[in-house]
Image (cartoon, rainbow, N blue to C red):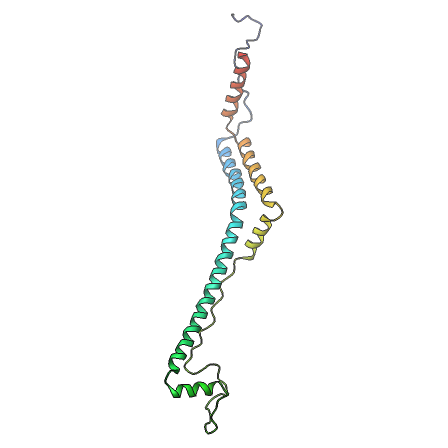
Length: 188
C-alpha cells in the first residue's frame, strides 16, 4: 500500500522529541555525587555497626591482655621471692620483719615499720589501660541497630540510587526505548 498524500503514515517512526539537553559533564558529576551518596548511606548502614563491634572487641581483648601481663609480672615477682627465700635465713628474717608482726625483741628494724613490699620484690607497675572506642561510634551504631533505623537507611540509600538512575539517564536510552515501543505498536 503506497503512501497517500494528506494521510499519516503510521509506519513512520516518530522522531523522539528532544528534551532539555543536559550537558554530559553535569550528568556525570550528578551521577557520581548522587550515586556516591546513595552508596555511602548503604555502606554506612552496614559497616558502622560492624566496625563499632570490632572496636569494642579489640578494646576488651587489649584490656584483658594488659591484665594478664600485669598478673604474670606479679606471679614472676612472687616466684623470685620464693626462690630467694629457700635456704637463706637472712632473707627469711628480713621478710618476717617486713611483714611487721615478727620483729625480734633484741633487734630494731631500720626504716619504716611496715614497708610497702617484701625485700627484693619489685612490684610491677600497673598496666596502662587501652583507649576505649570513640563514644560517638558506639552511639551511632546503637542508633542504627535499634528501632528499625537500618531499614529506613537502606530504603533511603536505594531511593537515592534510583533517583540517580532516573535523573541522570542518558537521553539516547530514553529515545531508543520510545522508538522500540512505537515500532512494536505500529506492527500490531
